[in-house]
Image (cartoon, rainbow, N blue to C red; front, side, top):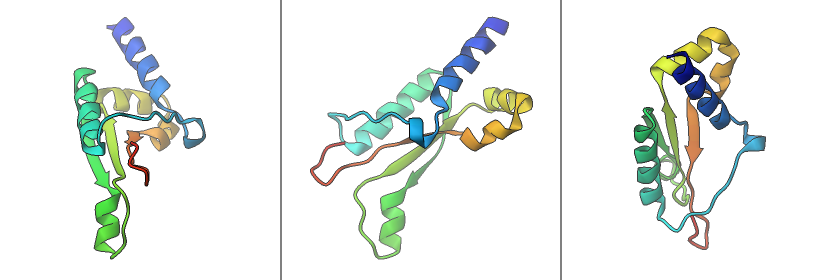
Length: 108
């Protein structure tokens, strides 16, 4: 159990990077497909998708246009609570956020 917890902490810690250290990868998939694929990967790893923020829909409700830019929030109640118990300031980085967006030229 201790090894599993250590492994989970190390995996989670590798995901907790600030925006200045974030990684950007292009995808051959559409935004919707990529968001679904990420949700599947998150579920396979034992985490859950907490919420999705559809920035383009928010922009549209304000009468503005924005290409697809969904933000996916993922985490684990159990692991998140354990991390917060050790250091509450880590809550700034939780839940893990993944942004998928489409460029004007159609690349994702």
